[in-house]
Image 1 (cartoon, one colour):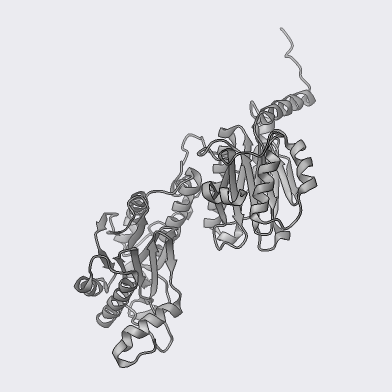
Image 2 (cartoon, rainbow over the protein chains, first blue to last red):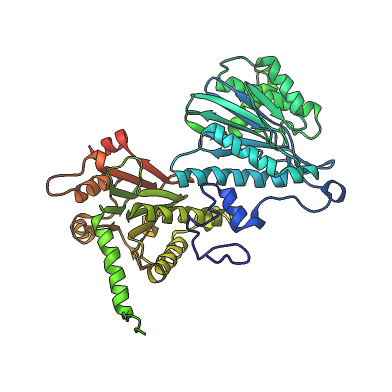
Length: 277
Length: 225
């Protein structure tokens, strides 16, 4: 079948069965039919020549029902604030989520490709990948980004989900080489990750309720914002609070800003001081 | 030297069409009904794992009758087309009409140029916010596209079933009513199809994002009453 120069097959179908069939993978399909759409390394040294947007701290905490994910809302560009409301926590599919720290452009692109990849597999095969399979898939995407990472466009995601086969929450972190490390209980990455992680470490316990884990995630992000310039704290004037999502047996659920604002207000004011309830 | 055997193009096309029709007529049938809650697709399919009905995209479903491996390939090609388009442009740029056109082209191409035509009929259904905007594209083995209103029937006993369904179908059926009507109409004079022989897919009008889901086991049992 003829492939148009720009790779788009808007009016002809790509039937399976050809010599280099991409199988159930959307990334392989792109690689074969539209390689220009794949995220790739830019030429030259990016760090030297241009500024680009950075997204920072994200945290994932395992709780009794599954996993809680949260991320601050700040994106920086050098010493400037590029965006106050950026989102860093995304659903990957019905039962998993991905959050990102690092160069915002390639990270968003990676998340979009990962989401399509999981959905594509599920539709072609008729059933979703296992949680382990999804984590491995993300690992390959991170590894493919290594050339860009060497030029300063590193992306380090956190991946968490509810393992339907084993009925509990699991979370994975990655390094720029695609290394995949399963964390037992919690993890935080990004420039404020160390501070957030320490905060979680001090208070984490087995079988936390989802509410307690959300509070812990919010506190850890506020603590990180206190220490790290690139992490955004709660913005009471503009009413900007972290993105929060839970992933349980019922699936991925993102909390709306109002719900997070209420919890955050309690934490900031302290219940004793008569904060609004 | 012997002259090559001459067969008129009319005869070639007729032979191919007869061949495809025979293959399809051997298979079981499938109906799709537009209703108040969404589009319900009911298939006569004794297998629990080899599906005739599948999800293509957010609001688009696919169904095929005839030769399994052939409509399965068409399904995968459709998912590729949709995902590729959604990734390159945006999710809202993927629509059933463009997919049906691509299918028509491929089926037509295969019908005239390949050794044998596909022995399939396929359906591309798209649910909309307003029932009046629902779309049912019924495609034949030779690439013919029919834009159907209200309901459509694919497969072996299509004409007979369509006549019966035409007498009983009305607008605004609920999911349960659609599933019941589908099961009844696909059944024979001896009675409705058993739950074990039914495959039901549903495009939920009110679902945010991916609207397709399979209805099976207990949920299907409850719907059929």
